[in-house]
Length: 147
Image (cartoon, rainbow, N blue to C red):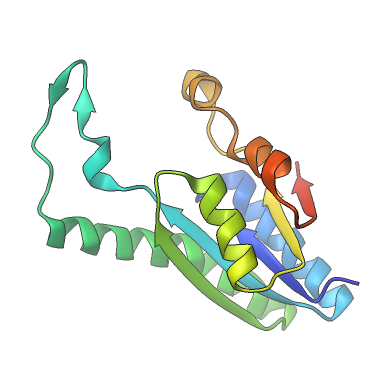
């Protein structure tokens, strides 16, 4: 059945739950997992109400992205370790998380994407749209959604 599962995270509580469930599924199937995080491009997020705010240096942005990725991906590694499932992690910088998820699944030759049903809440989730929904629409690889 499935042998390599991509587990994207955004650091939300629901994505932590999805990581736990993905590790359990991987154990039951004898599969391995790849944890994935698409960090936002910090430089492109510094616009507010028509004003361009001063962005941090490229070095500071890179350090922040690395730290954030390590924090978010470590919980996937922990869940994989608990279930004794082989795990690797990867992250990229992208303003299009859904496309980065699909691209990572292809690159790593995953045969399943296992992800949370949503991460953002409130108005920002409605305005920005659901990354999970976009993955479901555009992925040629099967997607399993955890609620």
